[in-house]
Length: 290
Ligand code: ATP
Ligand code: MG
Image 1: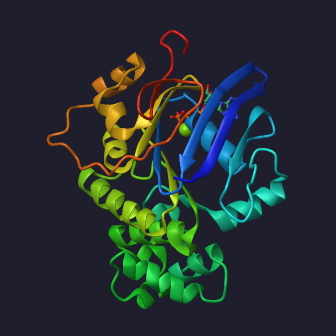
Image 2: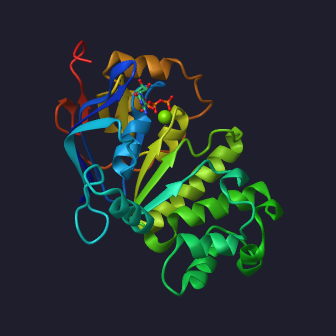
Image 3: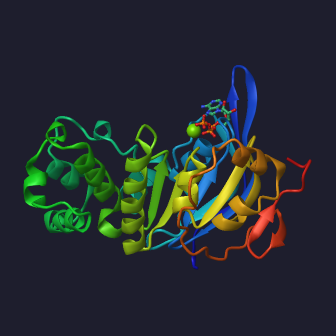
């Protein structure tokens, strides 16, 4: 698929009073239209730094080498080099941020309709919102638009959050631990709803998660990070069923076996630089290099 995100030799270092921390080290990653790219790795491996880089939200204390190009919108955009104001405008129009899918990520003093009005653009936001909520299985969407967050059930609030992130056909969706705090059954339900919305718009979804079963259910491709290094990347099935890097194996071994295999979407091809290709589209860092 046509690449939407192209990360080229990205290195990010934070300077603090304690010294220098290299949060990402020479990362190469392409993400195509319609892909669901999971980013996994232990705490401190650089996942949030990768998201912040993509969104143009790195703190001033970060030093960046390499480049990012995102083809979401009319022209390729470089979120790490763009002035803050431009990055804000770009995010607003092109990026859907999927928060943790709970009531708490809505603003208590705004109705659902006011959320849509402020997130969207164009004069027909109301018609689009009604369509988005209907697509997500909410009956009486007009009445939902008039409600405040505390007047929504948990399931309604999750659907509202997904609709807000995915409406207006934003080409890039970003989700940071979207289901943490939800029980397993609800996790499966909202994961499927989010996937449905993503497929409808063919957006590219970047999913940061500790939950390998969620990655297995949702992702077409999985990238494994360790200490800022991309150690393995490939189709979700290949990475989870035939992990090549010992670190990936240890992450998988730490997960209790699921009772039954979860359905996987069709993986898509995607080349990745800097790593060794072991099978079509499945790349791994040389062991010992990471
Ligand atoms: P988690 O799973 O805990 O969210 P993460 O994979 O998102 O972890 P990052 O938050 O990207 O990891 O952090 C990567 C490294 O950069 C860590 O060593 C972290 O301590 C460091 N780091 C992150 N933000 C800053 C900052 N603003 N200033 C200094 N160091 C930072
Ligand atoms: Mg993080």
